[in-house]
Amino acid sequence: MSSPTKRILLLGAGAVARPCAEYITQRPQNVLTVACRTLSSAEALVSGLPNATATVLDVGSEDSEKRAAVEKAIAEHDLVVSLVPYAYHPNVIKAAIKGKTNVVTTSYISPAMRELEDEIKKAGIVVMNEIGLDPGVDHLYAVKVVDEVHAKGGKVKEFYSFCGGLPAPECAGNPLGYKFSWSPRGNLLVHLNSATYLAGGKEVHIPGKDLMNSAKPYSIVDGLSLVAFPNRSSLPFRETYQIPEAETVMRGSVRYTGFPEYVNALVAIGLLNPDPQPWLKDGLTWAEITQHTTGAAEASEESLINRAKELCQFPDEEESTRVISGLKWIGIFSRDKAEIRYGNLLDTLCARLEPLMKFQEGERDLVVLQHKFVVEWADGKIDTITSTLAAYGEPNGHSAMARYVGVPCGIAVQFVLDGFFKAPGIYAPHTKEICDPIREQVEAQGMGLVEKVL
Image 1: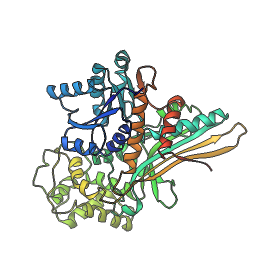
Image 2: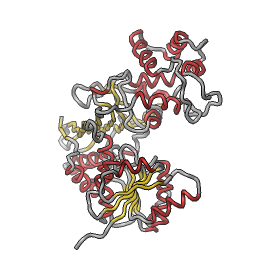
Image 3: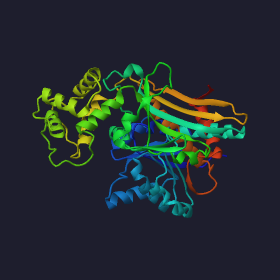
Image 4: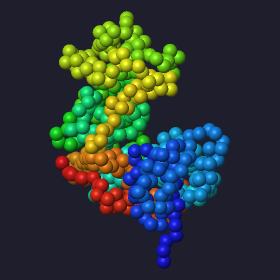
């Protein structure tokens, strides 16, 4: 007996959507519609996929006709995958409640999503979240190791988890040692968030302005020189991973050594400011913008560099030379005309960085993820367990980031369609019951983490 057809709507045609679409369309009974604001992007994404069509939808629009079109499309499908910016997920979920359509997202469960929980249950739908790379694959292995340690009578005294999307070392040749595998704006703002973590039983808070100064050398892959810094609040993860005994809980990001100093310099010069600037008008050169933000006496390169050095307060001449040469490479002291975007400095800088720091044809990215558990056993013995991923993208194929976000998302879609979740509600892979079977499917795709006891 053949299975009934399942209709899936995928919202967003960004970098991680294609591996997700490929996974979904492996099943002949799955019929996929990819929707994006631009038809050409959606058409490019479905090119060559079986049972897949493209359409235009604008999830972020306030226009009543466009919103009605989104609601109608969602209601016509069994499940909607929301790969649009997380701020739009509540709109998608509200439409899914009306249409009684299941939802999958790769994003954290936000308070705005949590507020819809009663309506989600009344509508009888499943909303599955946090199933990409981070969050996603990280949960699958944290829950696994914690569960195994507890089953053997051990305690997790310290938990560290760091993740980063980087250019592969041979592609990291620009002065910043960095390229964008997702939204440059979101990417830069990560480096300005305040962070809170637990260290030795005490809460440590780092204001956003000091975040990059907190970056410390951290070894994950032999031969790679990396630094790690905390991300947002690590505190909820003591409860998420059910490790109340943990005295240290820190989650964060990694970059190549030397990168944080560039972020600090851009902050000091004033170019990461997201607030609208009335003076920022078309026709300005980068030198004029930098003169304005730094208060330099004039817009000559020499004057701008001298002022940048005053603001950045480099520890020594070597570091000054290194960072200033990177800023020159970006072009913020140049007479190039700036592309003013949304009237603010952050987005205008993004317009400058996008072409400079994108992956070129044939280049590959690198995704690193590592959990480190310091475990105390019943006999007092201490072990350190690591769970590590170092995955490279395919030159001219999928990036590692796209694969490790898109495929787990596709796997979760299939779980929802197959009726794995028996009750309606909001879900995330925080329990053994959800994590174990999803992790088996991730590993079946050759995408697991490697565990070691040090």
